[in-house]
Each structure stands twice: as structure tokens, then as C-alpha cells.
Length: 237
Image (cartoon, rainbow, N blue to C red):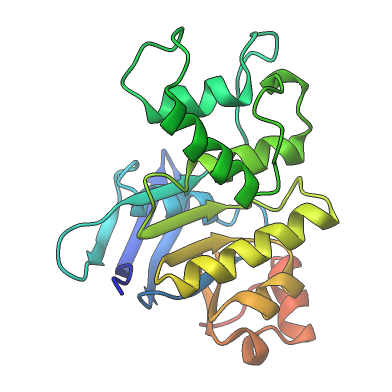
């Protein structure tokens, strides 16, 4: 079974103007693991993801070590910004991303079947013809997860994907993460739900501009450390 890549960040630094966003961030993500990033709002978590994806200039090094040929990277952002008045269905949205055909043409039957299968996997069966603008925030997050599943990713990066999900959606998401890990996918996951991190993650890194701590969730996510993270007081790495 092919495994996703390992990720190594060494001495990562980022400034936007005079503001320091990241300072000397070093971490290692094991191949085929679920690695969670936690920390307060404004702590640099999304900026770290953008550096790894090559979207922001930074100091230091980011290395992805693939098992053989370079694989596919999937990305699920925090939210989807679009014009909710557009007469675009879920099927239209996913077909446009998956096809090199013009968006106004109906997707071929084989593509529609693949889209329906992905929607079923994220708990959106029977909703392919729903208008995107009529979806709830949690339903849009499920659609964003569906778009990241094809082509099948070897590395999947998730930026707070559970933020708008209800209890059923969160349960579906957790099962999907476990399935993907079982398939050898490397998962880098920004998350605020620390109970979910304890249940699912193999390793957790706490970030507030610099690394506060890094290790197994059961060991690192003690009550005092959680208070330290979200009170912005920070602790030594």
C-alpha cells in the first residue's frame, strides 16, 4: 500500500510587514499519520499551512518526502467564498472541478457516478442537485471535503473542517479521517475540538507563533496545557 509523505519543517519563520507570524517553527509529520495542529486564533496555524503548500514566502525549510513518485495533495479550506445567488448545484460545482469539459455541459455518467460516491462518503447522498447557495455551512464543508477526495489524495491538509459541522457531520468526518489513515494517507489537520484530537490524532503540535509543545495527544493535552494554549500565555517547547 502506498503511504503519504512525511513532512519536515525546520526553522520556519514568517513576517507580514512588521508583524511576526511564525518564529522558528520546527515539526515532523510521520507518513500515513493524523497530525493535528492546535492553538489560539491568530497563532499562525493557517499561515503554517500556506507555507507548507508553497503559498507564502518564508524563512527556513519545508520538505515533503514521498514514497517514490510525487503524489497528490488535497486541501480543505476553512470556508468557501462564493456568490450564493448563482444557480450552481453541488453537482455543477464538483463536476467543474473534476472535468476539462465546459461547465455548462452536463457531466458524463461516469463522472456523475464518481461524484455521487464521494458525496455518499461525506454524508451528502441524494443532494447532488441541491443549489450551493441553499446549503448550510456544515453541508458546504462536506462538499469541500468531497472535492478533496478525487483525485484520491496521498496528502490531505484540512483547515478547521469541523467548525460548521453538526454532531452527525462530525461523526461522519471522524470516520472518514480514520478510513483515510487506514488507506495510508498523511493527514495534517488544524482543529479546535481537542476531544476529537485526543480520539483521532497520532500526534499533536500546539502553535502560538512558535511551537509550544509537540507529542502524543494523550500525553500533551493536559488540562493545564490547554489553559496555557488558549490564554495566550505560551509555554516552552
